[in-house]
Length: 240
Image (cartoon, rainbow, N blue to C red; front, side, top):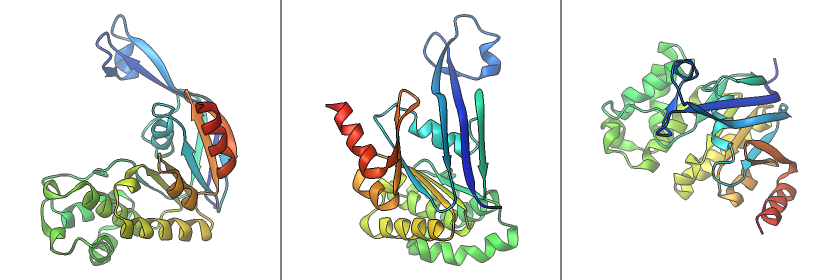
């Protein structure tokens, strides 16, 4: 089955208590004076095999919320969302790493959580160590890692899960020039083999190298969809 993303009138809703702290939808029904806000509303779009799509827009526009929805972290409150294909995501600098564990231990854990068997995870350790470029730091606790080192490890593990859909949220912007090239290379391979890449951030030159298409988000809605250069121009024109 070919990888694909299809959203129809997608909506993601958040609830907040009186101190503006987020609460779950289950608790929202038990508390008084709970307010709600839609992180995404009425989003409809499709992404097919071999497409790379950038999510651009101002902070708070819904880019991270959409990526987390594609990753299965958020469940739609309205409409529907279908994501076909093996998904790998790097949606934060720490990439779900446990700080007390070493890079090696985190590698094994994340690889299994990413869908590899224990044997496959063990076999991938050497490749992750080499790909991440962490050298002897690979066997140190992740709490001693810099942001760039954590992002390197998380991406190297995600790469080993052989994703058909790769999701990136700004973390590639914390990487050094050398490892950015690795991210670009991997993204191009995934797209070239018929997979899908969706990336969000504010580094537009990097996003343009990664993605041929862009979605402009504003207020949790799609404001423009098309070729990256055209959508970026629309974004800057509206911002003036």
